[in-house]
Length: 80
Image (cartoon, rainbow, N blue to C red):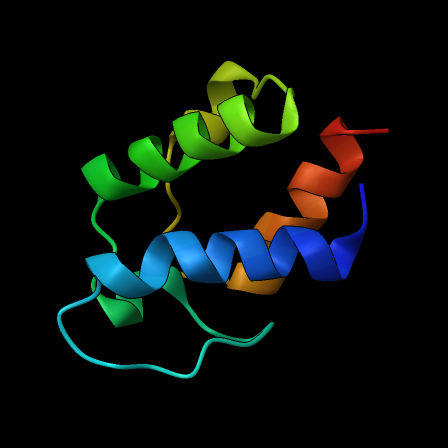
């Protein structure tokens, strides 16, 4: 799983769901761009289906300060 491809897939998934246009990067805090806990779970499901990984129960809880970079890092860990 390549980091840039993963980031691009998440970016393409999130952009149509956001109420405002944002430039997403590694430091983007998901809650600051309007991602709710329900939308976060939907994002997890998308990533699981798209990349064939399974998140652990602890991953289902969205931290208020999780960045897109930290989220991608976690996906990379699970995909190893």
